[in-house]
Image (cartoon, rainbow, N blue to C red; front, side, top):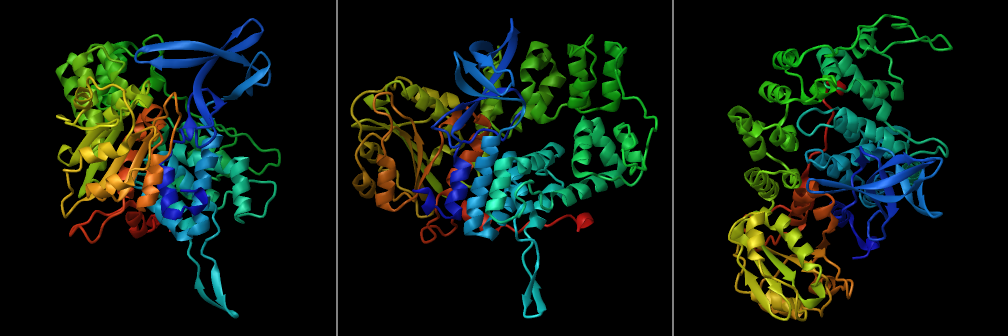
Amino acid sequence: MNNENLGPAERIIQTLLTHSDHLVHNRPGVVVPDASSATGVRWRHCTWKREGAERVVYLKLKSGKKTTFSRLGVLTADGKNVIDKGARLGRYMAPGIFPEVAVWMYRQAAEIWKIDNEFVARWASYAFTQEHRDLKVVLAAFLLVQSRKGEPVRDGDKIAFRDEDYRDVGEAMMLLDGKSYLDLKMLLRIRDLLALPPVAAINRELGFTTSARNPFFGRYVAAATKWLRYREENRKLLTGLVKSGFRSSLIRLAQLIGYKPVDAKFFATLRWKQAQAKDGRRTLAIGQALAAAETWSGLTEAQICERIVLEKPNFKRVTGLLPHDVGLTRAVMAAAVQAGSLSHKDLVIYTPTLEELGLLSVPAVQARWQAAVKGAEDQRASNIAARLSSEATQVALQEAADAAARKAVAEVVRNLRIYVFVDVSGSMEGAIEQAKAYIAKLLPAFPLERLHVATFNTFGKELAIRHASGAGVENAFRGVSASGGTDYGAGVKALANHRPTAEEDALFLFIGDENAQNFAMAVRQSGLAPLAFGLIPVASRQYGRGQCVRLTANELGVPCFEIDQRTFGDDPYAIPRTLRALIAATPVNQARATTPRVSLIETITKTELLRKPLWAA
């Protein structure tokens, strides 16, 4: 489907299914051209070290427990580019916001806005309850500056009513608390995103601002001021943020918006020394002595453990206060686990450390770790498993990743039968292992009783997945290799006996290179009547990529949603989110099911617009 023909619903689905890297990278990297990426570039982790008069850049590559360094080139004198033998290889990027991704995501919101203003506001209200942090930042930023801001609409000389105020939704995203709230770092990212010149250009293009020079921040300053004021007036909230390690972020936010606190206690809490401005306008805490920052320097390991158990600080604060001469020892880590300093997510992330320190064999620590693993919400555990020595721990983490995928799609998969077709023809030689890796991460999300899998070349064969796990998938594909010609219709015929019930819709998911003939006739003859195609394209080395799946979908009049394969390799944390978007995007046959699924677009359309908390109204 051509981009210009996409409506707001289709654009949302495309945005959710297209891999666009992360909005922010907290490590240095190099940005290199990549024509296959939605943004046209790709970020790669790198580091540099001085060798003689040059700063040599090395790509930092990680495979399981092993980290290797591959020489890329030399950093230019201005620190902006990486070159090799005079040729520019890419742009060096310090930790921070990834401009190309930020602009691409912002442009998606802008294109949907052109078609349907309200839909963007409802999309943002829906996205606020989801875990896609980057998307929430982008949509909040967009709504804070868009032009629908509650202005009066006149009937002659009188005000008849006020227009919708969608900037209120952006404010609400910044100000609401709860599980899905935007934390302080996300609030700062909103400002950084709006300050990007290409984003400012989009805002001028849409008529949100008339300034040709300065970026437009809309209602950001007002919302950030309310956010800071509420925490200043509720001192425990402000103190808690400082103790959690957000002191410098609080100071930066206050500086960016020119925040004027109620009294000098604000500066004392932040340990922020004030000096008089040149124009003499400042009146609070000028030259005031501030309490020294808390430190654990000079404390013994035993004393530090006592502090942790008594004060129960979060783990970020523990690592920030630990003196180098003590470090993260077995006793300190055990005390932190006992005190509840590590969240469930922390316990999963620090599994290699717990294993290295021998703490997973301690019953109390093991019990907390097991509870954390059972509550895993993404497939981060699958990546971490590769860095472990214990097979039992690896299995536990892989099972947690599989369970997270199942949990993510549990609701949207209701009344849906899924058919997966894997191309194993000769053109897939060299790519079949890659396809199997995608399947191992994808299939455990689906209920086995409504999942059917077939491989095909010129002959289709049904595969039995005996266990809903990566191990079950690996076992099913044991001995499968690439050979023969390609007939997608043969795969469809292999599963034709698995008819959806009167309550179910059908989704076809294809993994292959699309180098084959149109197979619409085989789909019609199967009687399966799919309402949508999902496609994970895997280009073959010999023939590249064809287009038979997309052409067949077009002839059948069903949507074809393409999932970027890099989601499975570069961003495993997004897999549950991507699967949920794919399934929820599948249209609903209202006539077939008495209790039909609710599609993603219907869910978004029915989402109530966010409202600011009462204290901010």
